Image 1 (cartoon, rainbow, N blue to C red):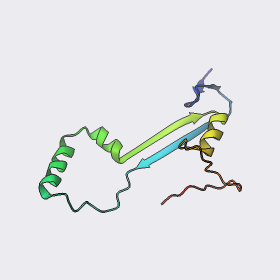
Image 2: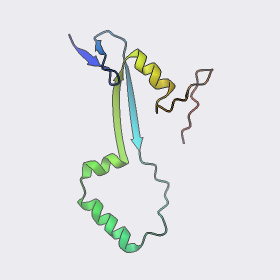
Image 3: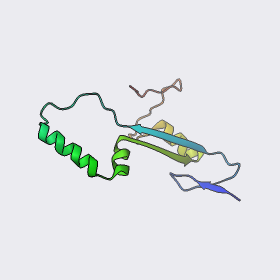
Image 4: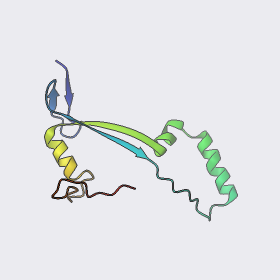
Length: 101
């Protein structure tokens, strides 16, 4: 029998069990501003460093997609406090109080 495992608590979730997939799309937020105190020499050094760096690691600094399987209990905890701040991110009406830009 095929099964998955909760990424948070390790509970075994068999075929037909209730489970949730949480997917994350993480993208660097470039605002178009480059610090003025970077000299041309420093900029050239940074570009040369990028050209010789591990492409996969560099790409993960810019864009990354992740997915996790959660059981019902862990999904409910995650939804209430996804960043483990001990604050509720759900208002009384069931809407999101967080902010996206």
